[in-house]
Length: 68
Image (cartoon, rainbow, N blue to C red; front, side, top):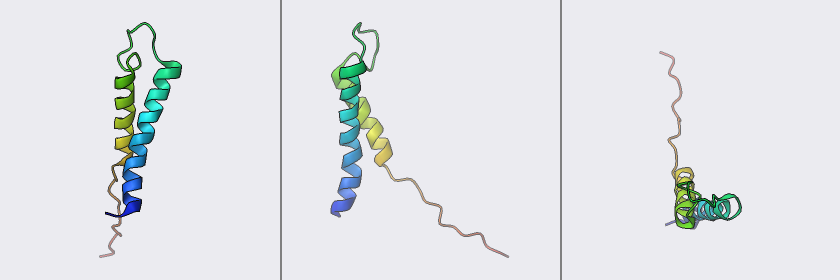
């Protein structure tokens, strides 16, 4: 596989996980009533999932209109 392609797919997932844990650490819910931010594992996994969504390539529209 292309090294650049691997970086484009892995970096957003790892970055999302780091941001998810950072959100838990600095802003998280102490009472335990918040489903995502009260647990560091869930918050990290949620961040990684959001990073994965950004890493998935979208379809490009390369179609040119035809003049018939």
